[in-house]
Image (cartoon, rainbow, N blue to C red; front, side, top):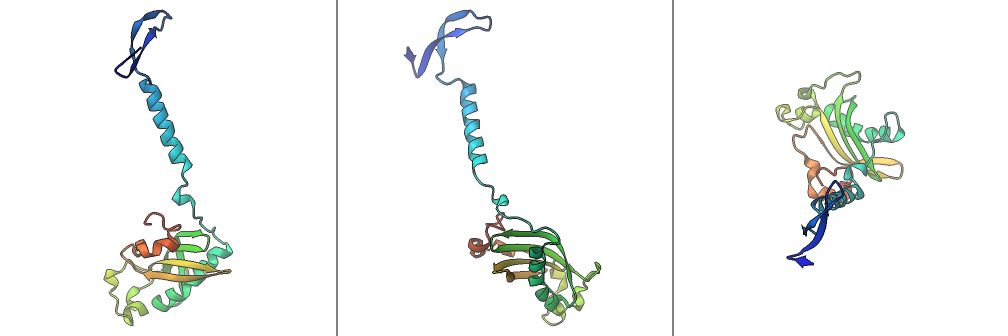
Length: 176
């Protein structure tokens, strides 16, 4: 029997006796919650995670070295030679790459921004720079990496530009 969307069922007590018929919902609350939880888990676990798409080249690998070598001429032109990098983040997905590094002098020496070509020749104010940090979007052609977009001392998240997402979104999923 049905009464306002409910099915009348006998209720069974914990001691095994049957209580008189009463109105019980078609889907008990626990079953409904379980089904919804299962659906949410299937959707969450079934979708690929954007962060899982990219990989980080390991220290000492040819790919990591090639990416740093592609960035080095730009850093040396703007900060003066020689420079080495402290890698804060390095991502690769297919032919797209993204690097977040800090430039320093060999052996860990700090770069005096006031004495760099970036400041002395281009007139940038070191007070408005985020030190010798460098970010770059790279593109792999054959076995070589090339820097397509880059910044030194940027204080904004310039790689969040929607125009860059079609090509580099896989390595910058947080902003694309």
